[in-house]
Length: 569
Image (cartoon, rainbow, N blue to C red; front, side, top):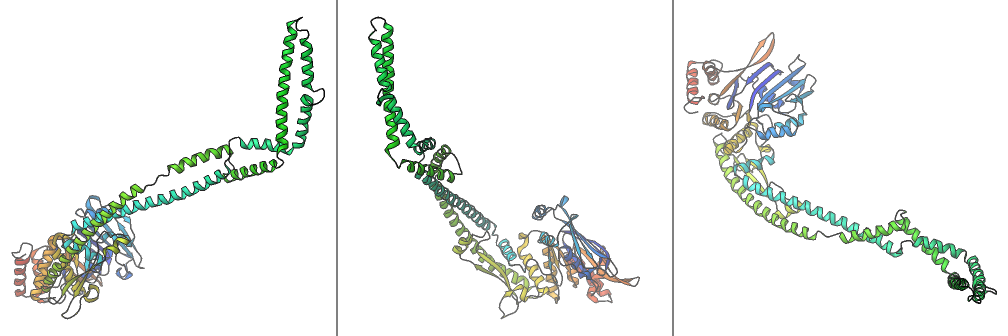
């Protein structure tokens, strides 16, 4: 609620400070006295446009400051905290400074704040009606919220929200699985491609070194063959070959073996040498055959080494041993790329159940809203009839969108319905949006009727009415006062009124007048605290500038009947 409003150098006001009552606050005064400046000042502190014309002539700046009690509005406190502002002990200080050149600054609890942020944070705390655009009635999204409160749709709405959130959560998880599957498939393709490159070459550990040695041999095959042939000739095949000479030496020694066993031993050892020479000769023949067997072998070796080099380049220059180890790792990784299809199937089944839950809850919510819309239309229209709008009818319009379409786009948490309040103001005329058919006074009365119809369904806030009694009198004026008092049981109400039977109901009566001081006109605002002042003001409102005793007696009667302690309060 608004506890205090402080104004400096604002239009006609030099310094004004008023405290407000939690209930019904009524502002009265002569025509042109400046009653609306308080509402305009409050609009500025709520984030509406500040103009240089608001600064009192001759002053450098105007200041508007408001203190709100938000201790019963945890939603407001939470929104403030989320934006980085606090409300110590449930008190919120809001300040606007307007310079004479039209620039302005805004502060929340002493901290600077942008006007846009100020307007957003104050939305829902104060509702202005009359010359200022109402935040509730001109915003269709607010219409749905009002209808849901009237229809007690909270449980159904929560069921819809729960299902919508679960669907979104499951869609997100399925999307993650699909993305991982896509990444796995890409990885599988890459691994398969790299393994195919590897297996096309199929290198063997140590192969490259062996091939290089073979290439070296093949490049010098003729020289090597000559060397092998020469060695074979010397050792085994030539005249006076080494193995023959060793054989002759062993035979000669054996002729003397009977004379000394040593000679037999030496002969045996020479036989071993001869056997070794024969084995060497066999190896020499084999080596010679390899060198001379395949003239195209060098090309094969060169091509194989080139293939191995290309493979190494594809694997960033790694050694063949590292490439072979990497291929083993790739095979293991390829085998380990398990599918998540089982998990995806389970999530899809859960999503189907969530979709069905959403369908049922959204359908039930739409039915509840349709029933509530009919009741709200009847109730508000009945209340409007008591406020001199007997032919007016509020028509909540519901447009229910196809659930399949909504589910395809992502299910909204508010359900399938778009809600807009239309007003048929005159007989025979079609219902149209409130912005297009209602005057400021009519809008104020529609909002008042809605507040009464909704009762405690709305969070406690400050309702400000200007022009609500425009064109009213008699029974309609009495009914207006009754409705304002009823609204003040659930909300704080601030209202400018010209009607005595309305003003008599005030919990706090604020009087505005103009005075000339030092040649300058000044708006003077003061609360009417005692009964005498209230009687005099009510009598003035009843009789005009000349207050009669009859008017005073009537005013006293109004206070007795309708005042805070009145019998018909």
